[in-house]
Length: 191
Image (cartoon, rainbow, N blue to C red):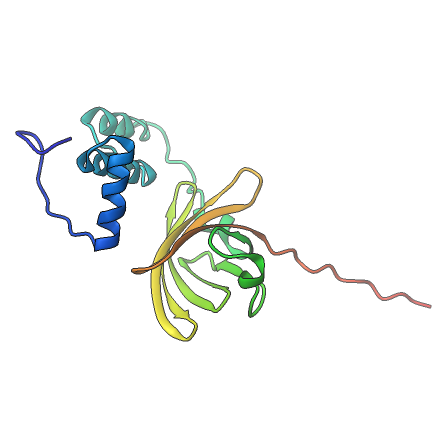
C-alpha cells in the first residue's frame, strides 16, 4: 500500500548491503521496493497473528468466548515445551558445529525462562507463550563475546520443535529439535 490519503509514511534506514540486495530483488521480481516492503510486513503481521483489516479484527474477536459459557480450563502453554530439547538440525551450521562443545540443546523451565547452547554459543531465554509454542529473547555469549537476539519455537504434530534463532545485527537461522530421551535404568540382576 503506497502512502496516500489512507497510508502512513515512515522513513526506514537500511545498511548498504541490505539496500543493494533489496534493489536487486526489486529488479529481478519486477516489483517496487514498496511492494516488497508491503509483502514483508504483511508476512510479519501474519506470522505474529496480528489482524490488519477491520474484517480480520472482527473475525478474531468473534472467536472469543460466548458470554454465558464458563471459561475453559487454562491450557498451559509452557509445560508442553518444558524440558530439554536436543537441537538436531540448524539451517546455517552443520552437525559438527552444533555439537562442538557438547550436544546442542534448548531447554524451557515452564515458567517463562530457559537456556540453550550449540557450537560456541550459549544463552538464557526470556519466553512468552504463543498458541503454537513460544517467542523468546536471549542474552549470552558467542565465542566468549557478549551476544543477544530473539527467536521462536513451535511444537509440531510429530512432537518435534521447529524454530528460529536470530543474533542481534547478525545471523538468523531456523532449527529443529527433539526431546532428549530420558535415560532408561538398567535393573541389576541377582545372581
